[in-house]
Amino acid sequence: MKSILTIFNQEKALSKIALALGGVVTAVMFGLFVFPNVADALVGGSGPCCGEWNDWIIWNPEPVINPWGGGGFGGGGGGGGGTPTPVAPSCVSFTSSPSSINEGDSATLSWLVAGNPTSISISPSVGTVSTFNGSTTVSPTVTTTYTMTVSNSVGSATCQTTVSVNPPTTPAPTCVLTANPSVIVKGNTSTLSWQVTNASSATLTGFGNLSLSSANASGTKTVSPSSTSSYTLSVLGTNGNTITCTAGVLVTLPPAPVCTLTADKLVLEQG
Image (cartoon, rainbow, N blue to C red):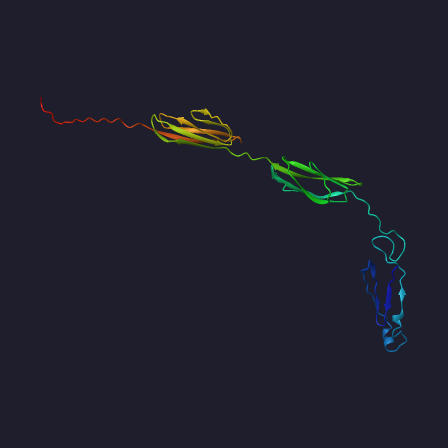
């Protein structure tokens, strides 16, 4: 039990109350008391003088109370600290970074839990983890919601985070069509060269469907138009889009025939 020591001097009384917990002073109180007979004491009156008040000691029997529970300091009844009461665990945070990925990429799951859980697990695919504050890498192929479950003898809690997976991007089709030569004389031929990529099918004017060995294919066709003609290559892409490309062949008429007649002698003699 602590005591409050009050010391009075001749001119004023100073009172200090110190509350200590673990060696830390928690409160200090000052009091000032003025006595009406101070003047008499100073001029030699009958009042107390010169150190008598300094010898007055008053003991306060009131105990200093521990505000955190239990009995007073220095003994006394009341229970002190004990084993903390267990509490159910909780999820402080459970996140994914990034929250959206392309197929084939990965994301990091990070978590922080409280309440002293005895079991921490993440589903699907991750399983049991051993740290209260940790992370792990996942690579889902489709959008996936991950659930973390924490538990102990008191109870359990769950929390979730979702990793969105963007579907793969299908490239657009391309096509090239050229004519060589692009100008011919009527009756001659020109070669059409074609090339496609990311194609599921292709058609060419005058030839119908082209035989594609794969989504990326190429070939040639020979044409002999009788007049100037335009050829169109139409391609249906693997992404469902259709594109076209064209090439033209200019047909010219052959030059007009030329005849020449000459005589070895311009003047002939009769007979």
